Image (cartoon, rainbow, N blue to C red):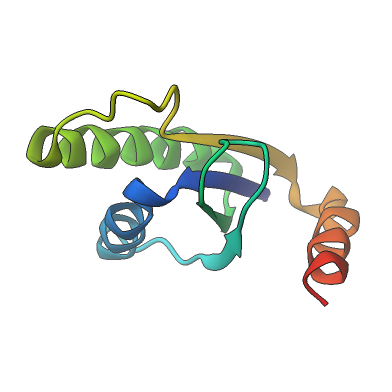
Length: 103
């Protein structure tokens, strides 16, 4: 089991949330900000089976590309999102840090 942490530029967050829910993914959404993407962002947490990580990453990329086809590509943004894949059994310290920073 993997924990996928995805920090998404706000322009793509609604499209990703809807698109991934439509594909059956379950997620936790956290409002986030800071220097990672230099703009407003949303952090999604996904718990997925090891074999499903590549499919999730492909689905995220395709949803963003489809969104850009409709809305146009952003000129001032280098990335749509940044994601990290962590072994779920090793994710407790990360989740604790997220919880403590939002308190």
